[in-house]
Length: 300
Image (cartoon, rainbow, N blue to C red; front, side, top):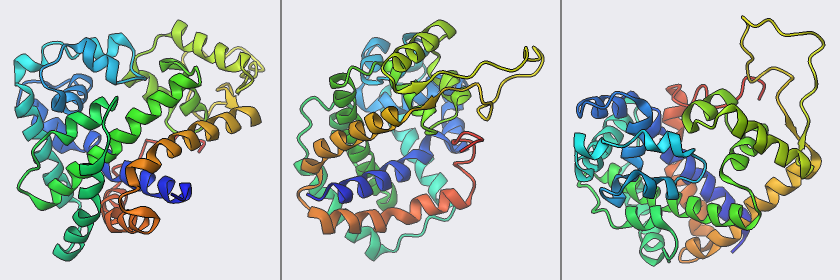
């Protein structure tokens, strides 16, 4: 397959899946189980397809989260069993998509399913834990949410493949997050708040990437900072990618695309690009609603 088609459909799938972790409907459903902390709710919703596994198993599948971040989910299966979390996830996704006005005609839904269904059915999920778990979930009766669940399988399949590539390139869990934030993929404050790597761990990962030549050392401030003024992602003290870092990061993405070519092979380049265009209204509607604000560093 043309890897540009793989990259295009992968980005479309990731974008169309993302809203579920940001919309208020998810928090409302979690609160119904008595879970009001966003971190454990996120972990419960995303790992529910795996069943009532210990937090250590979830941690194994969630590569860039610190152990302390995932340990916080202990007790979520006492609040509600995984199947209820999964059902609540579907309810939240459907409510959110209708609130922002996602518009997919019956014909568009049918065409999208005709493309994604053989992709999911034919997916080799060996070593793809989150993809396999989501592929085992019975699709809901709501056609729009059922499509979104198939999108979820494809998104998690690529994520699972990406972890293999990261490990092959000796990019550890905290390292990959530092690299992602330096590239402008996520605000540092948000990444650290949700993944909970401490100062020492973050500094060590930054030092490792700097030693590899992938990060430029943060410039020293001209004067001592005001202790009452917190740093922001726009501050020049944040490390930045070097040319070598940009090349390395693109190589990792390209290697992930190579893994994912097999996933999209059942529908080929044309089908993959068509699927990307068919699901674009999901992302467009949430973008227009402001759902993704705050996911990019202020300087990006």
